[in-house]
Length: 221
Image 1: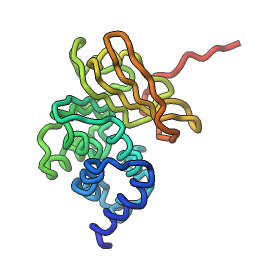
Image 2: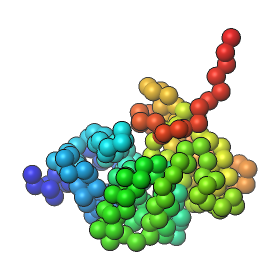
Image 3: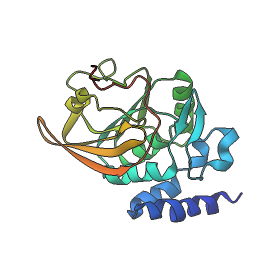
């Protein structure tokens, strides 16, 4: 396989056609070696429009979803990012290349270890990965008053844990795929001022759920 041609085809045929037109985002996807973050057994599928198995029952997002996420967040060089679900580390690397600092929390130690190694090989040094369960709250991992400019959930959520909005700085954005399959929407939450957050549905998609995600209250009769 011609790796560079496959990477170019991914950008031109999958990502551009999914309304990712920001040239700086396209350049980022060409620069960060996606194949280096894919398990060896699936390396030949690194640029295919699919979710790639990572082990532990987890998967890597399809390339077009990663690209839209990066574009829609409109990341800035000075920003601090909190990522819930490190996975392969590829999205972590993309976030780190565009921002000042990424704190990433991964449920599975095996995935955290392999992601950290891949990120180090890529020469990225502004990422801190912690192992633990932050699906419903980051309380065990960040100070109560600590805020981030960007928060990203890499697994879907039936409902967004509102405690995370307390950790979003004014002007900050939170990306999450919210809902139950098959009715899920990629959603951008923006904190316009203290105690005020807007919500924008970006597109419909389906994403595997985050482990131990908060469940909505269900009425019983």
